[in-house]
Structure formats: structure tokens, C-alpha cells
Image 1 (cartoon, rainbow, N blue to C red):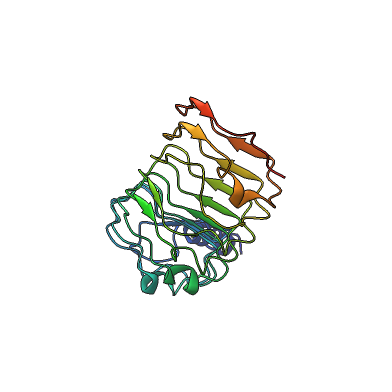
Image 2 (cartoon, rainbow, N blue to C red):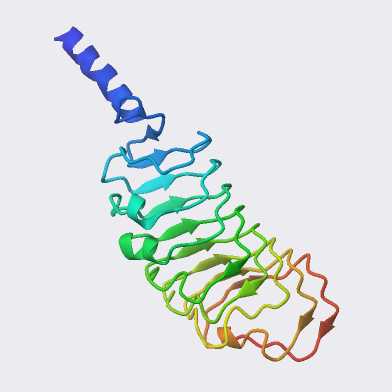
Length: 217
């Protein structure tokens, strides 16, 4: 009996590290698949289908194909930071309806398109820091009614305006530090007119003019 228990214990330990023979990703007990730092150029297709979190950071990914991730439809957290992504597929969130945290920091995005996050309606955290984003097309965050945290720091934004409509009503934290924002005018925060914002970081910007009293209610 003791030998049997030991064998089962060893199997459990191996199971906890990797559920698929030959797959270098580590699977933890909380259903997190750690596939970081593996020089991956494609999304692994043989991970457990019921994983809740997937860490793809520090790899060589150029794309995040929605079709490749659709098999992991229980995902709540996706980390694709520190890759070479430059385009986001709107269909990704349509496939991952339970996604709450999306990390795309340290990639090569230069713009956010109108429909990028249309289907990311359950997101509570969105990390877009350190990309090179200089252009916001339309109102890409309009549908993110559950978003609490948005990090746009260390980009090339010249304006705080992330849209031209009131949106992000439940946003608590907004990071726009270390951009190229030099002026704050009347329209700077109109998109946050009805927000519940508690923290706004504009540090390390070349601010030289505040052209109007800034009021966020």
C-alpha cells in the first residue's frame, strides 16, 4: 500500500507540472498553463481544454489567431506580453467569452482600431503598456463596460483622449504615464465624464500647458 501511495504521489507531482507528454508548458493545480520563455512562434494546441489562465509571455509570437485559442474557451486570463504582436483579432474575445484579464504589453502595436475590443465585454483588466501606440481609432473601448484597469503607459500618445464618446463608466485606474502628452484641454477627459475613476497617472509626460480646468466626475 505504501509503495502504491508513493507511486500515486509521484504521478500527481508529474501531473501538476505537465499534463501532456512532450509539452514544455507547465500546468499548475489552479489550471494555469505557463508557456512563457519557450521561444514559441505558435500557440500550443495540446494543452488541457479547461485551463483558466494561459501565459504566453516572452516568446516569439507574431499573431494571436482566434481559431487557435478557441479550444481554450474557459480562459479568464491571457498573457501575451513581450512578443512581437502588431495586430489584434477582434474575433479573439468572441471566442473567449470568459476572458477577464488581457495582457498585451511590450509588443509592437502602433494603433488601436475601432473594433479591436468590441467583443471583450467581460474584461476587467487590459494591459497595453510599452508598445508604441500613437493612434486611437474611434472608440475602441466603448464596449468595455466592466473594465476596471487600463494601462496605456510608455506609448507614444500625444493626447489623453481615448475616444470621443462617454465610456468606461466603471474604470477605476487609468495609466497614461510616460507618453508624449504635452497639453490638457477641455476635451481631454470628456470620454470619462461619467467614470468612477480613482487613480489617474500622467507622470513623465512633457506637459507644458493646461488649457482648461480639468474636471472628472
